[in-house]
Length: 614
Image (cartoon, rainbow, N blue to C red; front, side, top):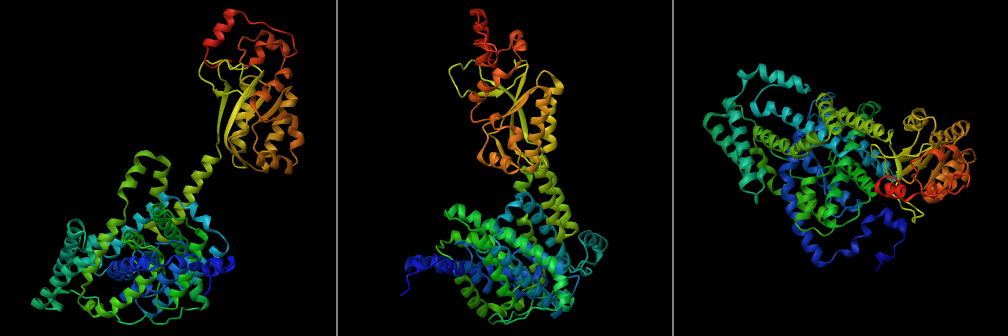
């Protein structure tokens, strides 16, 4: 028998499920089986609804929840993430392919399969290139705004099915609203009645029958009402259409359209879906991992999601990602290993073989009502309210992402990412710079403590002490340089500048050149630039850029006490003789040239009573 714990590292990377397979025991298998069956029941109505959103036959949603779930569980890193169709991905698929082909047609399905394959290929390439950290640049606000916009689009896409209207295919959001408002007289009352009953049943079941799947309760209620109305008045009179019987079979083999034209048409939307799906999957995996105390490998998750979509494209599945509902249910139901997610696909197949014929009785307006509830639940009203109350810049990011999604769903998320990154760059390009003075009268502390200057506080007339908090890179050079120049422009006597650099996180070539130029400028003024608390990476950049000699190694100090002791003798003796601030402990001992200086008792008491003097 192979000892899995002794496998080489390369085998773990090729077959990552070998890491957790030894943890499977009869006890964990039992728990995983229960969780898997629960998850299969949950996904059945969801998968049908998601396929409807994507413009595909209902069974394609079920196929997308089978093999991709198995592959994602075995090659991902999360113990509880369950892959499959999701609302956001479904709406992007529909928005991307519906202008190119009639939804549900063979051409539409072929393009969707190509889209799925390319998305999986991009995800796999990103995982193998170790680009997992890229998802960190997509802010939570962008996801909230995009999801809210997608939810509105989902609801808009189902207006025609809920009210029985004939809305032109591929109409934009505003066009759907205009068409709806101008055709209120064409609403089919029996169709709307079935939708309304389903909607009310779903809302009530979700609130008062929490132990039962609200989607199934709502579908049953809508199906019963539709059956009664059709039996009483006839389907031609009521206008109530049904989904039709699902294909009770294993996921059939399929082949994406690999023609050059199909690849050109789907490459850009495939990139969007790849990024969105990865963001969704990693975010869900991390949120569940916090509860389960597990470490998530983003790169491995990229690989798992990529392989799941590639496999799905050859087995009649469309683009999938991590499902928050299924993953949450999987964890709550007691799943112990990824085997639960894999087995849920097997249970789903068995359930489909049993209940597929019943879909013939499922009314289309009932599906629309279910999607209205799903769309409403996608809007995170709590966090949207918090953002609008407390975060001005995030409010702008949220609004632009939301509006951009409504205008062009494919580019909406990129607009949000771009705006959030611009705000981030703006913040980092303006590092906080504060002037400091020594804390009051710490004569016996060689390392000393500095505090921010307050109004009316005494400062050294010859030297400014600035604390830079942030990074000095090409985008921040102008901001930092202006602060440095403001020191001697406001007071020409302050020819010396001491920078406390412990809070400087990063410096690039442009930052090193800035310090070099500032050091040269201050020497010409008759002063100097001094650095204290410099981090190793900071020093390394100064050396690699060749600027350390210009700045001067004798101008760089480890501690503030050491810096003040070295700088004080270089100050102007006559200015120090007339100075009454005396904020450094050296000021009370001697002048810069070494001439002893005594401090009267009255002066000593006055200095001790001043909180910002030393």
